[in-house]
Image (cartoon, rainbow, N blue to C red; front, side, top):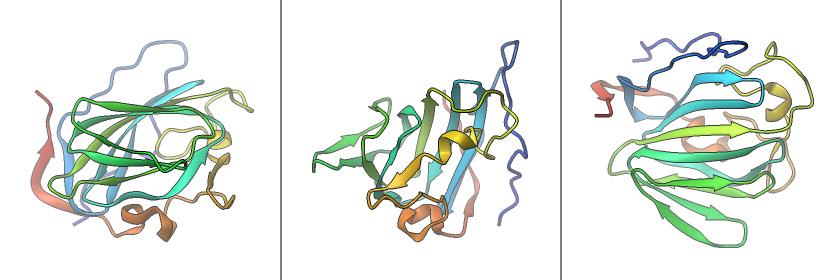
Length: 175
């Protein structure tokens, strides 16, 4: 039931402010969504929803520092040094560039994450963005722990590699 359209181009903030919303975000029975909210040259934000699973393979972003803020549900983050942390609603984690991590959603409810990233770009401008609003020069610097370039639908990404199934009539709508 893949009836919700994903924007073909992220909303970009070049020389004026842009407004975005996280209301009425479709929840899932299976899979994940990764939708851009807004992108500026050195800062980008997106909303992610996981039915279960998460990003299940250790990986690092060499081109960006980023944070996750849990808006709904909870996730267990695991770091390369073996530390784990449960991050619940209205809590977050800041991940500096090159820090390896992975996370798994608690399956009791959908995990809804606000993701904000920023970094020093190797390319100027906003002409070459992914559908989720991150500049492609930044994404190309993301790798699995074994050094392989991280690709979004790789089976090691867990829930991200599964077919998306929307939960009919269920939406994330913050108060």
